Image 1 (cartoon, rainbow, N blue to C red):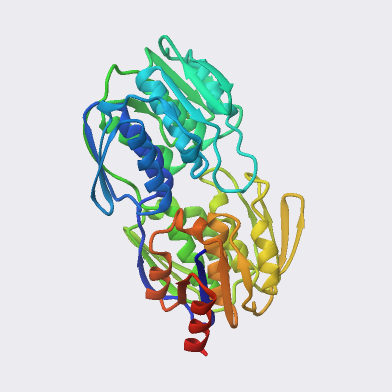
Image 2: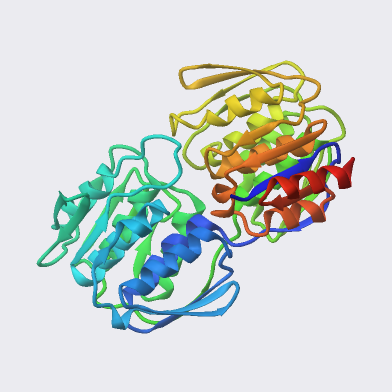
Length: 430
């Protein structure tokens, strides 16, 4: 089992290139099978989740050709299977996007109930509500969601809760439904907009993505396209908080600053200097962070995927901070690990009270999910001594070349796979 071993104490300084948005890419890859013509998708992050999704697409008969590390060609004309097996779903929850894509194109699909990161209950009832509203019969049989329709028809749909997954999944299915679909109380995240833009580039007629109401006029078929994924706002935010926690100076390159507004606002709150450029953001932390209050909310609010990163930073802040998690109930698991490093944390329901300490101490900790794992690495880089992060398979699901990028900023971090490697690292840095 691979681990990261980290020697803390160095501020992160320099420039780092941000890759394509994983969450946008997963949905766009699924949407890519909705035409019988070839689509070319680039700026894909080379991470485990993307590779699993490509395997799932290939497994149902689509042609998948890797042009290079960040570019793929997909042709869905050879699809002969509408059943996405549990092996794919248990690795990445986003495989469920194939439900909406296959239902939209073929009027039938069958997908195992989803797995993914262990961050709490993420019900799919809104997905199923949307498919049923479009005229599909939806049942759960033997651990699988089975959706079928003679014909999908446009509808007026109001989501009970804001859900990124349901917004994207139902939008894909409605793209080829007969007539007009109006979806209200939808998610407004940048990757929702990116998926809509991709579908429109294939000939879909989707308006309003990024607002509360999306209107979709169904089309009979979609055509080939070439498309580039937006930059990953969560990867960017992770390195930005890396600068804050280590009192460093980091410029994230290849970003859309507009997508980072909530993250930037909190960095300014805690005392960082933030400079925005056309496609880059610089974060400078000249002193220990200040305390603040955080509440996670759907976009454009503060993202739940950035909650552990600010949590680690506030563990080193002056004064007491509170974080209220309103999206996922299990998102505070990383705080137990952070306490092993000397953080002063107390969890009360969906709120965490974090009293800042002057220094964290290196310890052996375990990643409980993707963002928690990356955040514990930041904690290790800010801490005194040596930190070992176990279960880094979670981190590799969503961050490309994570340790290489941290090393390029001056972080002392290596990937190891044995006690012998750990001892070698300890000798080298002692």
